[in-house]
Image (tube, rainbow, N blue to C red; front, side):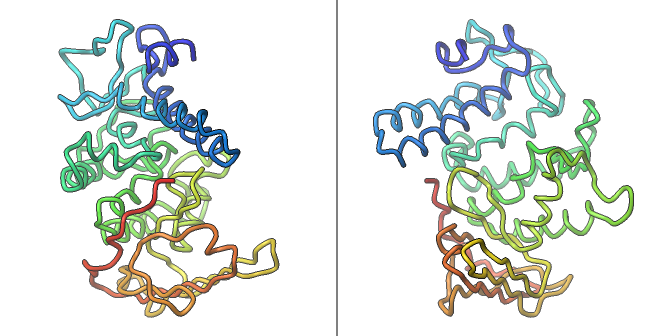
Amino acid sequence: MKYYIKKGYVPADRVGEATSRTLEFAYDDFCIAQFAKKLGKLKDYEKFMERSKNYKNVFDRETGFMRGRKYNGRWMDENNFDPAKVYKYFTEGNSWQWTFFVVSDVYGLMGLKGGKEAFSRKLDRFFSEDSNVDGPPDITGLIGQYAHGNEPSHHAAYLYVYANEPWKTQKMVRYIMNNLYQTGPEGLCGNDDCGQMSAWYVFSAMGFYPVCPGTPYYVIGSPIFNKVVVHLNNKRDFEIVAKNNSKDNLYISRAILNDKEIKRAWINHEEIIKGTKLVFEMSSKPDFSWGLENVPTE
């Protein structure tokens, strides 16, 4: 932490897994800021929100990737950097996987990458780049450079919603559920650390996912069940219905929340706990006009 506070990043020539630490510390700072805001401590809120932008200090604009940075400010592996390689300044992953770990400021990351279209193209490459990754056994369940068998990648399929291409999220989360989860001893494509592999599936199967815990928003994907009822602690129910749902009808053409049509590909926690009925109308073809409203960041 002393390096992080002094330099704005953890130097990779002084501390192991430094870049991953920097990215996670920045997210932690964002969560602290949200807590401070709730407490009415606005100076603390502003301080930690500013510090939550420290992820930018390990982003190399020239290569477009997160990298290890030395104490003197220079990049590690300056002349032979490979985003697919697992360097010691990343935790159980490579730069492809950790570059997208900016869940608290997705739009800020987009800005570094040149905007929504460029960001979406980079995601396309992420899911289609050569899957040959030389690293620890934690990196499994590969789709391109995306590693579903390990936590740092788990939010990535939902990032298309932020780029106003929710149909790509719908297609990818269905693909992951259909191909990387099976019954039997080999039913999970990775280590179910604290139940996260299973938690991803439960959320995604219902049709939504918390991309940025610490905010009250859930990003909508593609539900696989015709109907799910969640019994809440306040004695109310959250009901999700998917009409015309099937293996081929994986795209959302229409969404209705408590009898009112919504065009956004996200819901908030308050809507859920009030006792809500969310109805999706599914189709075999993507609706390019649905889900284009930006996801809130706080």
